[in-house]
Length: 326
Image 1 (cartoon, rainbow, N blue to C red):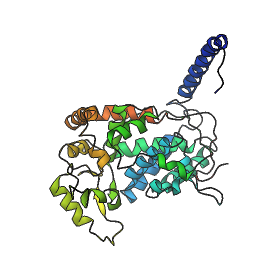
Image 2: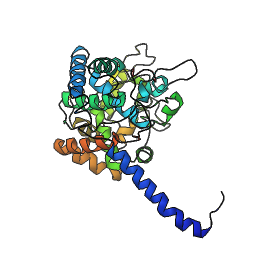
Image 3: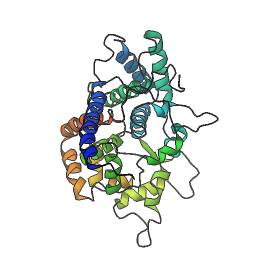
């Protein structure tokens, strides 16, 4: 790499710093909880009504929408790139291996259709996901917060990039590194992992923990033994029931702090979840949330707002159809 002479360096650094500062403030400033107050005041009600209706029809919707928001923001930021369909020349994010089990895209599409009738070309698909994620948390008994809005929709979506999503097999150091790349700290990582209080996992995501785990242990020693035997019954080998699996905590349709209490007794379904208890950097946060649900809710809101600001830029569009670029 060519070196810049010292005299030029001292001149360039303040300009670069100023540019980065302005860029950061612009990114922050473009999101506003009142963004649609004048242009589409009924936006949040339309989205909320759609989410409530879909959740009554299918109880799996809340967990799926929340996961959709995480998976969208972790790749290219919160730009609704997860909603784009693949084309003959490009395989999109939703067809990447980690996203094949992400469902309920129709809920976002339905809300978008209604919004296009009420206020055409105004509400981005990225904002719909962010609002819907808040709504499913609140609908499930969790906290409610004012969603910051004003995101634009991206035009690029690549299945290959989904390899960067945090896998259920990662350890704490790998999780910390993954979240840090998105500007999220250790507490954010443990807090957002609490989203696993909603939902279900298929056997394939934890199968390696309950059989032939290692040369020394048939079952992952961090897993509660009786719990592991129960999982074996649900996930026989060979397994012909591809829908078999287990709920992520004992109150899987309720947004609460049970996820953290389960971790403390060795009943974390994923090794990535259970690893949070075995590391001194994260165990104290797990213990705090297990004791105090109000604290978890408060921190969850703060971390969701941070996550919702990842990768936000003005270099996008408002898609007319969430599945395709304009």
